[in-house]
Image: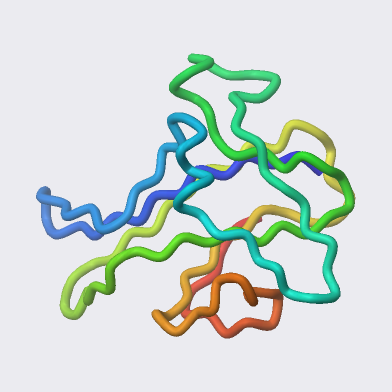
Length: 132
């Protein structure tokens, strides 16, 4: 299963938006800021940076792609805590499936500040999850 993930968390108020977290994966520097899980008992796959098989603009459409079939993928990046009390919160990400998927999918989870990134796994408590 090959999937692409682009992540963007946006906090919107009226027509003015404060962006608390945005990742466009422009080059290999993402590897310095994102943490792979090392939770025991799983063979986690590694992501690669590419525009994939189909794209509009090879440079601007880059994202993370899973590199191996039949693997779990667990990658996280911390961002500064924020509150959306009495305000709307928009969380957005893009997934592009380039092959038929029999099982699996791409998901985003938002965790609280206590996440141990290197120990993240499927049972780690989260605050928000969605995907396909």
